[in-house]
Length: 308
Image (tube, rainbow, N blue to C red; front, top):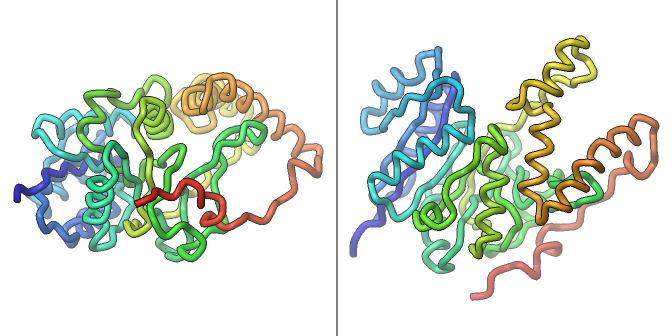
């Protein structure tokens, strides 16, 4: 039986130790029946990341970026390089990840069993490894767009693959056919969150998006950027209106909502609700400040669990 050809792609920038940790984790995964090749897109790192990767992992291909690629264009460059090797699958990952030994195997098994599907891993926080992280966000127009879960654990999720609306890009397995049918991510719509626009576009084109709960990936927690309110006035204006790649930028938020939403109308409405909600929270509106107890994801997504 021929080995499945797998290309693993990760864009990196000035996170030398995290990148090396990620590669050490990948070196220990189960590769039985798989021909695995890794591509690191080093987007202008100044901390010696590229040299360290070449020295410690000579089998890894390092592709140099300009320093202006960010996540979306950096991932695209890696995918374009990967497709030249004619793979069966491309696994796109973040470098702040540690992988369960059988993570890749279970994702491949899922993709082979449920054809015409893109597979996301089960993301868990590495400091509290029972807690689910950025898995299966749910769209809520009146709450401003994609809503993440904060109380879910490995015990509250479906125990079989389930279908979702979007996959966060920390660990996503794409059949190579996806790129010939749908294309690549669009950095003009989001420099940082191209995965949201891309996976929803894939879904709209007729592919299924699945989460494989056996494919565990342990991720570094996100650290919130400094509040815009605390910035000096000129800095605030610069980020909100001119630095379009920054996470605080209004244009960036507009495009992210518009193009990752179920429909453009819902995206436009959610963008307005996002800032209306911010205003209402400022005046202590009870509806927008209340915290609702989350139901178990196993109950919420019971109807989307894939049937064997």
